[in-house]
Image 1 (cartoon, one colour):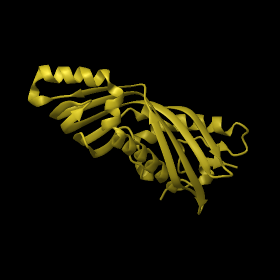
Image 2 (cartoon, rainbow, N blue to C red):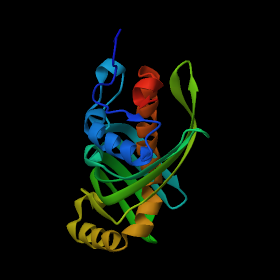
Image 3 (cartoon, rainbow, N blue to C red):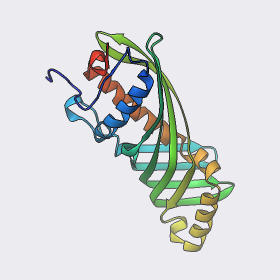
Image 4 (cartoon, rainbow, N blue to C red):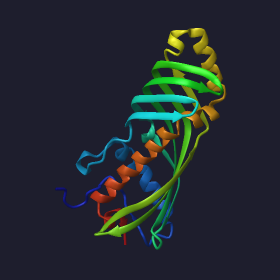
Length: 222
């Protein structure tokens, strides 16, 4: 059992600080890399890489399954803003990261009304993935407990690479590859929402573990 300061990597702010939000922003950025690496003694799993396992995309036009899915890049996130209302038990974290998803894939169906099929390795690079998480919390038995959250995300660019499309037909693969990368926005809407939801859920779940392991008065001073 850990005693004393359970999170020495966190520089806590004071609730009486008139610039509380800005202080917490800096604290999150300083602690972020350590948090993303995982903290076994607090039961916190790594978020870089984050293991998503199997991700299934099942829409009317496309069947796509990612397996052994791994996402990297969250460690180098940048906090855009943090807002906390201690009276209402509400907070908003807005951050950006460049992330890469790698997985094995099996795909069959249509993208942009074009037929696509294959099985091999997938790589999706996301430039400036901007995630906003709004959460509600309460203090129970001296610890913060997240009671619910809402999220949203957007990005500047997505780039796709799928090996072994169309049974290895390079001409067809190059054609569809050029099309989906030129029209990345509708493609990412078709294939990625489940993966993004899983990424955000992983972030929230590990934050919940931190709150459960570290007393609130070590995260926010009087």
